[in-house]
Length: 426
Image (cartoon, rainbow, N blue to C red):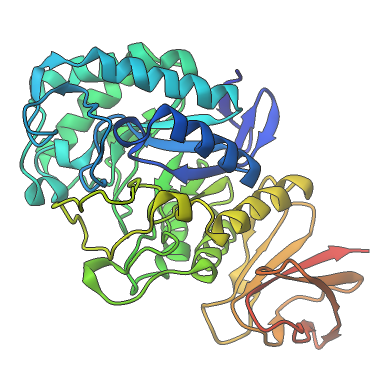
């Protein structure tokens, strides 16, 4: 069981000295909602699909689906609505440790959230759900418990969950948790999971975290955050690996009860928008029905969170096509040995922000196109071969181009959906 570390140029990760592509799956509700038998099947399928990291909440997810496992981290008389923080439920942690052991034996890395925002006062989530606010004088003890149970699995510690840092209360809670993780698990990787469209991290936390997580989120409007947020992080903060840790989830209803759902093509766009804009260490996938673990005949959770439409049963959600698309992305980066992508949209002469351009240190170029069109670049790229990959089917085509007046003009690719252009010297 290896330990992750940040690579030398701070663009990505190494596992046992070898490049590691962070392909995460959002499975926030694992410890409360999934039986051991279901977990065994889940791990098998996600391994087949190419996932490398599992993102799990160590506390019950506030907007998870209703569970029949009866497992909660603390004593409760009302199915987790109210916790007695003075009384641990050791059976919960014993079961969680079994699940973690099964995951690492299948080769997965764990990314464990310490404090989701609804347990922390002064956050946007705690204003919606005020039950189970953790007492401040219990934060250190709880964080020590998390490390004592899970540190043997060498997890990434995601100290915050979907949070903002807009109040002194919230900053203080996360300061205590982060300081405790740093003290009790100095060699582990640490990060912060922050809310949709948010790019604020207190300066005091920056030296203690190893990489950045951001999220472009589940609102129909604002999907441009997939490329805007990594650009903001590159401009505002010291260089560290970046992950879009919560892009739009497949078949998730648009947030705020807006009619519509995200399909695989939207997820592919979010992934490539982030990867080609500087967040090239990896990307996280989410399926509506997996993150919250929807079971057939289970009543709906009364806590709607951000107001999403009904989720699919987990047995169906685990087969969504976008999971295989994301697995291909990881395979592509690994086989092509792409360890860093340098954003290069300043070369694009097309009048649109929808196309993304990036280059590697060895002179290769990647261009993501949601729709087929001629691409004009402000650079002479003589002696290159241009290959187009249709991302839905992975069909490939060679594309002609011309060099004229200091620019390179790439012909339209022949596919009717989104595609990736790969430019390499021949």
